[in-house]
Image 1 (cartoon, one colour):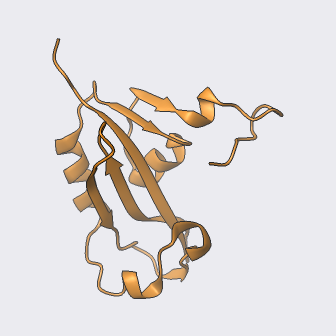
Image 2 (cartoon, rainbow, N blue to C red):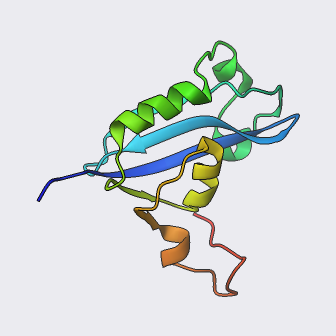
Length: 123
C-alpha cells in the first residue's frame, strides 16, 4: 500500500477592501514538523491584519511577494487526491486557497457544536 501522506493544514486571513483574503498558509506533517509555511500578498489592499487572531502584522506583510498562484502550485506538488488533510473548518481554508480536496479530517465536523449547525466550536 502506497503512503500518500497525512498533513495538517491551516490558513490565516486578513480583511481587504474585498472582504476576507488569505495571508498565511501552514502545513505540518505527521510528525508535527512544519513542512511549508508562507505569507501571501492579497490581491486587494489590506484594511485589517486581523492580528488578534492571525498573529500577522503590517511589518511582516510589508515585503511579501508570494501570490495565491505560487501557493497553489506548491501545494499541488505536495498533495494528491489521496493525501489526507487534517484541519479545523477546512472548507474556509479551501475556499481561501481556491482549491478542492475531499480526503479530509475536519475537527469542526468530528466535534460538532452542542447547538448544531451552523454553529462551530472554536479551536
